[in-house]
Length: 337
Image (cartoon, rainbow, N blue to C red; front, side, top):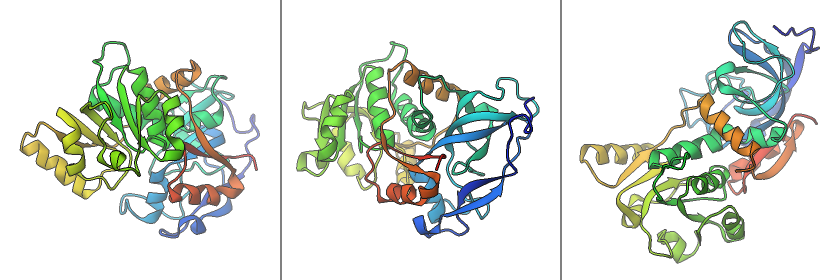
């Protein structure tokens, strides 16, 4: 087992936390706190990069209470990359010096800090071809895109059917991964985004791109007249009445940010045996998916598009940018600075 002394882990570290819900970027504070210790089946990581996801500020806003945050003050963010500096009892697959990507426990967070504790079963090795920032973008955003596409029926071993899919908000964190993954699965992709990102989304492989601000984009209708076998729905404010006419007979809308209304609609579809259905998706994090996604980056089959980078000392600016909702790709906080 690696020891803290051998890797010169300090007693304290810089971290960004909030001590109350509801204050947005103004509620984040840069503080000095004790470095956590790795317990059984855990790794202590010296973080290099972290990626902010909308769920992070939704937790701070109080939208997931009483489940999250579990306690205050809270150091947010779960998607990280860094280097192993210590391992707890029972860890066999990692050692000090390993470069890794990890998804931290949602209940405890910890990603906006110089050090964090990660579970071995949600940590994977990061090859030199994948930068810390690129790797940190993966766990929630790419993991959600992957699971949404699999729910529709996409396969990545060459055995899948050539499905038609729609990806809404395709220039966002999840959407940009979803476009690339859908093309790797051999799907026909129609995507929506703002006018300034149409060429970017096309460059990632989308077959048809709609400006969501136009009448055609608002209708979600494929320019080639295709009906969608599935929709990876990455935004809000689109009703089922808009989706229903553009779906194939057994089409599915995979809602990655389901609200109470969406959950009720999904339940209604189930009990009435509806052929077209709304399906809420909550990410089920697992090591196999994360290894698969890191492998795609390593092999150059997929890339992480980075909107912006901020030092830890300016994490509140990164937080505010995510809340604004117009990022193209991932917002990264880097721990140096």
